[in-house]
Structures are given as C-alpha cells and as structure tokens.
Image (cartoon, rainbow, N blue to C red; front, side):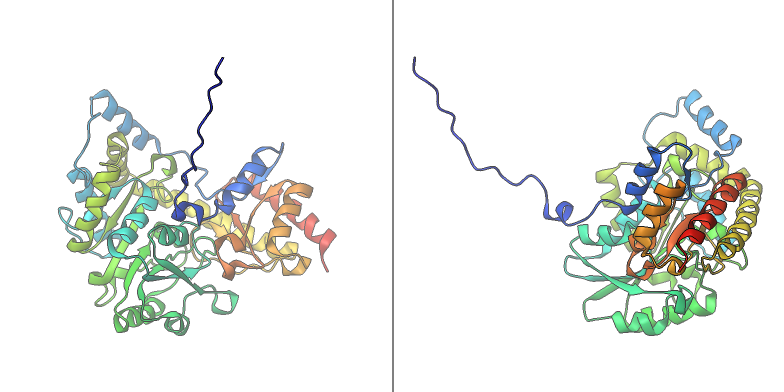
Length: 397
C-alpha cells in the first residue's frame, strides 16, 4: 500500500505585532491569585461595593419588558445624550451639543480607545501622566503610536507639573492623557494646577484626553472639568461614564464629549466595531441621571468616611500614606518594610491574605507604593488594616 506523505508548509504568524507587544494587565494577576484563597480580603478591586441603585435596575428591566431590544442610534439614544448634556452643564459647567458632540460608548474604556484611534497616527507620541490607569499605554501602543510616560510622584503629591510635561514634549508629541481624580493615587488637581497644564497644551498644540470617570468622587474640592478651562474646550476630549459614580461597572456604559470633528471621526470607528451601547443599559443610565443624584451623594459620603478611616489606619500601621482627594484608592508607600512593591503585595497576600496591587503596575512613578481600594465594607477595611499592621510589624526595618 502506497503511503501518503504529508506536505508541510511554513506556518504564518498568528499574532499581530501590536498584540504581541503588550503585557497582560498586572492587576488581573493579583485578582486571580486572591480568588484562589479562602478568607482573602481584596483591596485590589477598582469598583464600587454598592449594587446598582434599584430604580436604575428597574428602568433597565422595564426597557426589556417593553421590548426595547433593537439597536439605538450609533451615538446612543438622543434622550440619554440630552440628559448627559444637561448633567455636564449643571454639574461641571461644560456645555456640549448632544446631536454632534457626544457619543455613548461601551464603558469609558472604549471612549479612550476611540479617542486615540480617531486622532493619533502611527509614530506620534502620546504623553501619559503616570502612575495611571493600566489601559492608557497599551491602547496607545496598539494604535501604532508611542506612549511617553510623564512621571508624577510623592514629591509632586502625584500631580502633573508644567515643568515635567514640558520636559517630555518633542516634535512628535500630539496629545496628553490626564486622569484626575487619579487611579491609582487618588490625586486631585485644582483649576489653578490644571490651568498650568492647559497653557502647555496650548503652547505646544497638544490634544488633551481628559479621563474624568472619578469626577463625582472628589471629596474636598469641586471637580474642575478640563474643557471648562479657558480656551481648552476645542482641544479637549472629555471621557466619563456611569461605572464609578453610579455603581454601574458591569453595565459598561460610558460617554465622550468633544468638538464635532473629533466625535464624528470617533463615531465612524464606533459604528464599525460596536454599532451602539446596549439598549437596556442606556435606559438604566437615563434613569440614573434623572433620579440618581441623591444616591450618588450618599455613596460618595460613604467613600469619604472610608477614606478617612483607611488613611489613618495605614499611617498607624507604619505605612506612610498621603491623603487622597478623590477616587476610592489609597496609595501608601511600603518603604518602611524594605520591600519593593511587588514583593510587598505578594508576601502580604501569602502571609495575611490581603490583596493589594503593586504600584509599578501603573507605571514607574508607582514604584514603592501599593494601591488599596477602599470601595469595600468598613468591616473588611478594619480586618484588612489590622492584618497589614501585623505584617508591617513583622517586616519593619
């Protein structure tokens, strides 16, 4: 019998250079480790511990009951965009046209991706104030552009300074990504500090991607929207959403406000990749804006109380921790233990079953710190900080 011979052909590469060039999220690794441990307390999760308010859930269920199961406009329901416009004007003093200058997106993360892809070309440089949300730099890389970290650190109270931004600018700089209140540091920049950044953006003709997802969680000062600053509206892409303030992380609903030429370019990418945000979620978000402000205030007050507790407890435990002005993260230094942040987080998880996130996950500026989310119950915070104190006492140098 004649034996058949298999012809082999060279295998083509299966992965793109963009996908191969980025690393998995460093946060996810700690979530996965914590999930395998009994009695583990996680301070690593970046989402509210509140359930989405009942009236919002009810509105979404009513949407389904009434048969709203089709696509909406690519840009989102006009009723929702109108409500977003009223909310932004009333709450933050910025005025956008719901017809032309706004898109409802699948979470703020999609809005960041759209903003970059609609405005940045391969080879351009995008400045990223770090430590920062883990998605910014990979999204810039996947667009073919080059992320340029601009460090903030304890010496600047984790705020971006005019001098550091200017020092990082080159002829290829096209945009800067800001995120204040900040994840992971909790830093907040006031209008005077932001105005200094605005002057640099204008002088060097930079676009500004301003991620303001934590705007409602500013505890001590009124949040300043970057586009509300003088002459900044035309060069700002304002990104926000419902996840943090309205406890709607799983709904994946965000929005973006920007000048018409930018939103219409973003809309083309959005309509080809995602069509529109989920319809029942949009009905829920509409209810959140119309009747959810009082609940947001209650949740914010609760986070403020927990912030006050955890910062005091961490300092008492021996970890130097500045007072964060917003978001729901504390960012203590682990210097007292002599460990780097990665070792500290791993050993704390193994020895005390408390999950925190190493600061270097968020960029070089996070070195020597860990992110502790206080969006968890006060009982859990008390237990976690007691365990952290025991750990630090054993390892203090």
